[in-house]
Image (cartoon, rainbow, N blue to C red; front, side, top):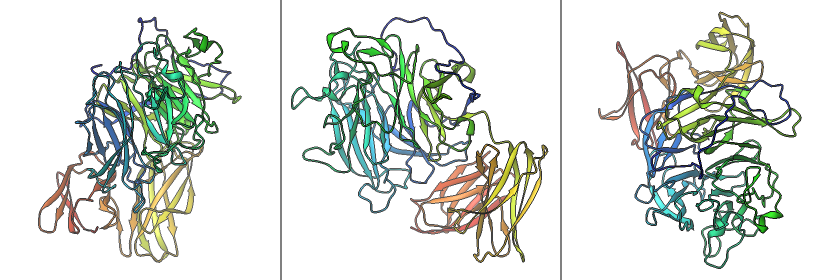
Length: 589
C-alpha cells in the first residue's frame, strides 16, 4: 500500500486461517454472517476514519490521510450518503510520510449545543508536515463558527499536545474518543523501530522536564475542558501516574473504541513478528493497565530482559497470527439483533472480520473469523470501523476509497410497500400494506406534532401472512393541524425498524414527495421521496437555483443542508422523466 503501512517487521509467515475460530468454552448461539454494502464510493482519496458529530444531523465525516475532512449528508439505512463537500482542509499541515497522515478526528460531546463553551469544537490528531519524515505527533482543537454547516469556518486553533517522534516514521497510533464524563482519550504508538528499542511503551514518567517519550506506547487521558497552568489541558485526578497516562504497554494501537453502552474499551494493537492482539478493558477499570509490550507480544514472551522477568502478562481477548489488526467497535444499533453486543474488527491485509462476544458461561470470549475472501471486494484494506449516531457500523476502505455499511444476517422479516393516512370524522385513519411477513410480531404506531419527537399511540399485531397483509388504525382525539406518523415494525426477537414518516393535515394527506416541515429553521431541510426522481432543485423566489442534486434511484428520507441559504421563500422542485413536482418552503435563520 502506497505511503501507508501497518505491517509488522519480520519474515513472512505461514498462514493458517480458519473460517470459524472458537477460543473459549462452547457456544450455543449461531454466529451472524457479515456483509459490506457500499454507501460512499466516490469523492474520497485514501480515507482513514469515519465518525459522526453526535449533533442529530445524521451526517458522516470521513478523514483522509492527506488532511481533508469530508462530510456526507444523512441517509436511509442502506445509503448512499450524499456528498456535501470538504468540511475542513488541513493538507498544508499534515505530513504523509510512511504511516503518517491525518489519523483521527473527534467532535466534542457538546459540539452542537448553542452557547456552550465547547460549541463547535473539533479535535484532530495528525503527523506534522514540518518535521517530516519523523514527524511530531500533533493533537489540536479547531473551533468552527457554525456546527450545522458542511464547510467549517474556523474561529480559532489551539495546539493541545505535541509529542516528538524522533528516529522513526512509523507507529504513530492513533485514535481519539471522549468518555461519558467528557475526558479525552488518545492512543499513541511506541515511536517505531523493531522491538521498541527505546523501551518507550514501558515508561510511565518523563526522564526530565523536557522529555515526552513517556507518552509513546500509551493510552492517554486528559481533560481538555479545563486548561491548567502552561498547558491547554489538565490531568484528571484519577490518572494512575498523575500525568497524561491512563494505561501503557502498547505497540501501535492504531484503532480502538468505547462500547457506547457499557463504556468498555476495545483496542487493536498491531503486533511485531507473530501475534496481533485485541485487548478488552472493562469500564470499571481505573487505569494503570499494562498491556505487556515490549515484554510480551500477544501471549508470548518477547523480551527476556531483567525488567520484564517479573511482569505478568495482560491476557488479550483475542490473539491471532495475522498481519495488521484494525481495532473495531461493538455493535449497538437496532437493525441487526443477531449482531447486537458483538465486537466487530478486522485485519488490514487479509480483510478478515473478527466477531467477539462473551461465552455462555460469561468467563471468556468466543471469536468468529469471517474470511475476507468471502466478501469479494478487491483492495478492501479496512482502515477503520466507526459508528453512525444510531449505532450502525461503517467500514472505511483505504484500498477502494469507499465506505461500507456493515450488515448482518437476520434482517427484519417484513417488507412494507405502502403507508398513508387521511383525516376522517372519527380521527386520522392510517392504512398500510406489506408484501412479506414471517414470524413478525407487531406494528407500533408513533405520532408527532413536529416530525421529530414521536410517542407511541397504539399497536397492531401482525397477521404473519407470507404474501403480506393490509392494515388500518384510527387515531382519535387529535387537535393539532399537522400530525406526523411512522410505524415501528417489531420482530419477535425485539429488533425493529421505523417506516418513513407521513403527515396528515386538516383536509388531505401528504404522502410521498414532500418537505416536512415547510418552515425550515434548523439549517437542514427534510424530505421524503416516495417515487424515483432524477433531480432536486432548491430555487429562490427570485429564480436563482441555490442548490441542485442528482437523486436518481433515491427514495425514503433525504436531508438537504440549507444553513448557508439566506432567509426567504424557496421552491423545492423534483424532476422526473415525465413530470415535475414543486413545493414552497420558507427558510429562516
